[in-house]
Length: 425
Image (cartoon, rainbow, N blue to C red; front, top):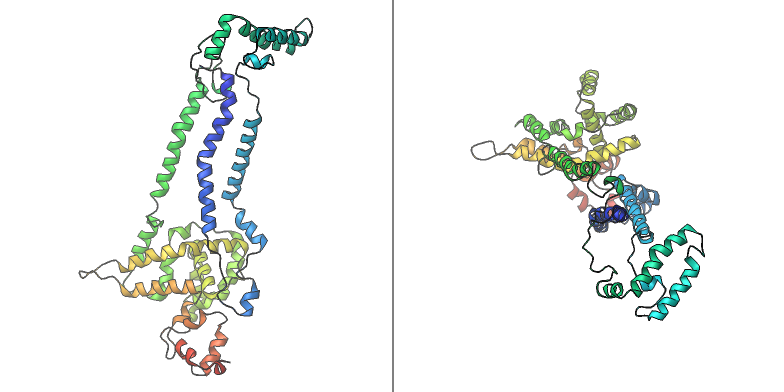
């Protein structure tokens, strides 16, 4: 068995290998994903969109996007790996290969006279009688004397030329690349090594497996919680009106996990006043309706207000913390709406039909979230069954612009397209 000192010297190589195995492929995967992301382009060629900077990211925005916990951890691990590579490259090896010719400063195959001459020269420099330095004494005894003996003794020189060592054929040695404190003095496995093996090789994979199984058991194949599906199934009714779909949608368990902070009270109150007309509150009993709305679970209230902020495009009142929650709500919305639609169209009759009315409500809510159009804008007005939604989803169209168009007896988007450009002014 190799000495423990040699094993300790190889321990950085062991750590470098363990780090590189997952880190290199993960970094390549992350770089490929970053390179495959499509950059947003300006589809509208008007001067306002070109100069607004909406589609251009500032240098601070790019830095903030890069400065995530995962990216910073990745950079830190690469710094540690580079340090290990530098350390391994420059560390002094305590166990070196025995090269008698190199120790005496000779070329391989030198004659006996050259060997004796080199030995006398080095003896003057390193012999204890000539040099009292303890390091010089150790070097003379451990290297110079052994090298001279290996090259002058016929048997030792023959063994060195055949087997590479003056003592003849050497046994095959193996070592464990672990630090010395994990091993006993004799190099045998100790109690600390046993604990290390049990902890790293058994307990750590077991803990990771338990965490993965506990998390995977909470979600479906579409990464939606089972609790969310049961909630949607319970509240889904054939008589569910499109205006009531929002109340079912916001009861998802994923939205219940969004943190509710006391600092959000004031901006949420301002947002409530801005979107109050979109909350289906009974104006005749507005005080009771408002009190009833705020008595709901705080996470439900927060989620519905943030979705209404998207529908009405009222983002100016959101604090930085609420903007983070707002992005999280929108990230979860597509797959939650997909599961909610599946609940509506599940075959519930002998003919295999689902429920049309709630399904239409889910589709309309999905369209409004994507287009940032209020649900009230989809109510039929005049000759249009879709209301003002086709106009409001377009850039630069507001309620005031739609009122001006209505004065010209234009009710549908097709009628607006058929107008002369001069009449549109």
